[in-house]
Length: 377
Image (cartoon, rainbow, N blue to C red):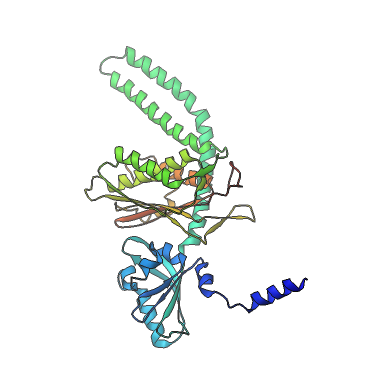
């Protein structure tokens, strides 16, 4: 080794560690609060968790961020009193304008300032979200196989049934014509269902390019405002520095349009309906690919939130499975299709819902210029 290299290594080893930079890089939420429980430091993960930048977080105290008998405030006060570290598991945090989260919390006094408390939060639902997402993909694959069979075995006979019904209608009495029309209408309905299911049978790799997700969201918003959501306020909160998504623009429009339409239907005819479209950069989350040793990072977060009726608890675990719906006339394929499109883009999607606040959270990879344009990223 050259003397210059040895000197440089010795110099680097002598440098003090930049602990602030180290904490900023952690995937877990880290905040430091003062004696009044006002935030004095927040890392990037905390900004994403609370939906506010560090500058805004520093203007807030814990009670302003977490509603109801604030467990974080109680933990911070307990640590100051006992002068020891505390671990608390499965705390439910209800935030005023964000979905409730279940977290594990580590709290400790800072050695330099004994009235300052460090709080580190780890979301409990993230691993479960990934596991459910893989289950959703398995369900979509089962529908893919069924769709291929249906397309072949049902569509051809349906054409014959429809043609026969039209012939019957032409020669039927006035009393029997409505019955022939009913046969025609029902065959059309079944054919439409099979057509929609055929989408699940398309296993071809999705052609991907760099896509500006904000352009996609703007397009979806224009469509919604011109039609099914004209009576609803649509807000947006975008991270302007968000990098491109590796994706198919048309497919992403289809997925997000389905989510916005789902939100509009949940709101119904309410006069105070609000749909919020938001984006954020969320480092630290990666998904291990099935049957592989490799993983893909999913730092791009796209959310569609609404103040509608919410999702029933018994439906939540199965929300993205085919034929699961809470609508009287729904086929239960819309959200299953969204899950398939997101999966085809190498991402995951999850729903968090409570009364008057439902959020569909889509996590996607970041575009890499060297990545292939087709297949999984």
